[in-house]
Image 1 (cartoon, rainbow, N blue to C red):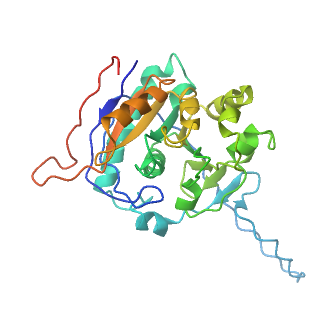
Image 2 (cartoon, rainbow, N blue to C red):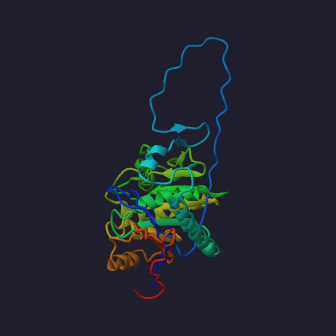
Amino acid sequence: MHEPRVIPALPQEPKAEPAPQPEPQQRVQPQSEPAAAPVLDLAEAPRVETPVPAPVAPPAAPAARVPGGRPSIAIDRDKLAEEGMLVPGAAVTALAEEFRLIKRQLLNTARAIHAAEPDKSRMILVCSAKPNDGKTFCAINLALSLAAEKDVEILLVDADFAKPDVLHRLGAPEGPGLLDVLAGHVDSAEACILDTDVPQLSVLPAGTRTNADTELLASARAHDVLDALAAANPNRIVIFDSPPALAASPASVLAGHVGQVMLVVRADRTSESDLREAVGLLDGCEQIQLVLNSVSFQPGGRRFGTYGAYYGEGEA
């Protein structure tokens, strides 16, 4: 069985999921990937000289639709800052540098496996062994960091169906999403994707909750839908924020659809037995990278922490 390779840890303790938690100090050891979305500029409407009746205001909608394009949402930068996450356009911080190191390794891995699995190589699962380890925090920050790359489009998918939190953390409303597509209520996942005001970043909501999420993910339709997410754009990198591997079954199913897994490990909480069990459940993917989160900063040590233990290939 393939075992994970550890990523250098980072000093930092921002919020992760529901409960406050320190955040990534990390580095990846395998390789990675990218993707991009065009920014649409709305031309000013010409002035109308002739008086016309005031238009009736349309009902409020959760997302504005750009003419000829997908719905678009504005990401709440203040909320990102409050939760200790990366803020698009802000000064480069230690956290930003850490995610630069992490994404470089993921992109390198993506290039290495591209020849064998061109579409899968651009799909990444972000997971953890247990809740509150910082996986959603890491998934969002990874997406924001990758969106700064050139010639890519990043699609962040909220696949934590029991506890979807991506849209909430971005300060955006929920809407139809992946589960609605898998259940056949929506024809195409592309119709549910929301563009954002961060260039090259879009989001796919989790969708309507159901008790059959794992079964839907394991269906033949799911294979077609998930494969189509990457195939729709050769520059697109798809990042899935999944449920914790030891808490919900969808994570192990999703692992079989992606080219690599980024497994978030809490330095102060994740036990070796939990880590090994999680790696075993995610064995549908051969490329598993470990990101060590919540590492205590040691005065006089390396600026971004040190490498954690390295897991080579072998039996658990």
